[in-house]
Amino acid sequence: MKFQFNIFTGAGENLENTMAAFQHAVTIGTDMLELDCHITKDEQVVVSHDENLKRSTGVNVNISDLKYCVMKELPPYLGKLDVSFQKGKDNRIPLLKEVFEAFPNTPINIDIKVNNNLLIKKVSELVKEYRREHITVWGNANYEIVEKCYKENSDIPILFSLQRVLLILGLFFTGLLPFVPIREQFFEIPMPSIILK
View 1 (tube, rainbow, N blue to C red):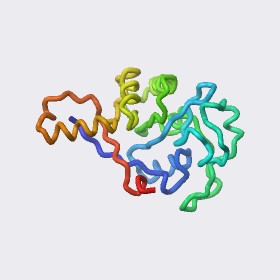
View 2: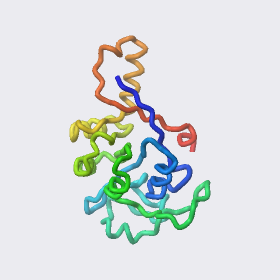
View 3: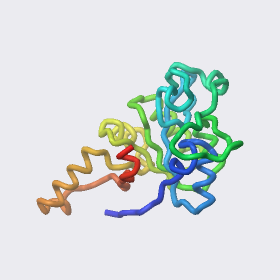
View 4: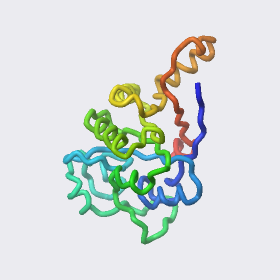
């Protein structure tokens, strides 16, 4: 079993899931970006934490109900958070392919936010198109989503789901861990400051 430590940053210093946050993270030396994906009505993969945009933009609408061309007309992310952010930065909702194009050599952890076969397929296609299988990891805390990711493209490393983390702990404490094959390659450990928000 191989373990790797990576740093995910940006959300505490910039608006999460924006090109400005990703650029800042890379500039200060982050090893890996973490982002969240959803799919629009016209099958574009966008980078956004929430399916519903009320919290982030002030508009109560689901990403899956909008075409991307309409999303571009929505107001940008709100800057009303606990910290002050630099003004004048790009704070729109980006496409996943834009992130891949802007950071071609930066490893990326993709959180598939909803259990949607088309989203999983489209993300896989983008990873293949940009030849990022060796520097991309994907999944979710949900076991079913991780299974679908693995079945869609087993060349992209997967995250441990919560269910599999509990299984690993059980196997470790019973001494059975060395006897069980493990296909996951990455643990994602949320920061306590994020969990407690």
